[in-house]
Image (cartoon, rainbow, N blue to C red; front, top):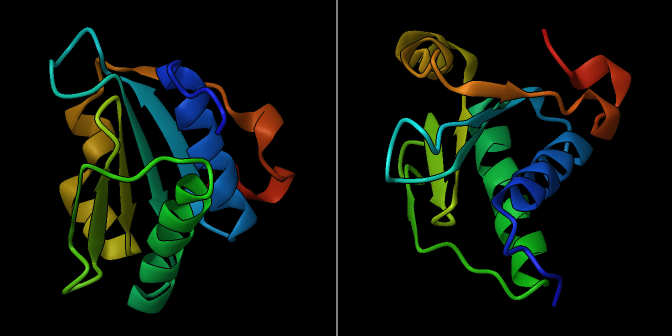
Length: 127
């Protein structure tokens, strides 16, 4: 089991998993100074509800192989926005129109964007 006591390392690992599965516009926001809920958000988009579910499933599968299970999941019914709660890191996977509507990056604009470009394939960093 890998050591993911470091929230940032876990957030980056999740971003890499999403990127490998062809997620779009993967972002990591450090929000620990803004909320007691979590330290980081990982935000990504899929092109369809099917891809959103596949992206979330892949994160769950890959992390379960490393001994980590989410504390809770939400959104698998509609698959427009799937949330995976890993306590210190919360993963949000959206279809594009739902991501635009909720605009978490704007709502949490005081959060610190983490540069993850070195971990992602060049075409997937920002749309």
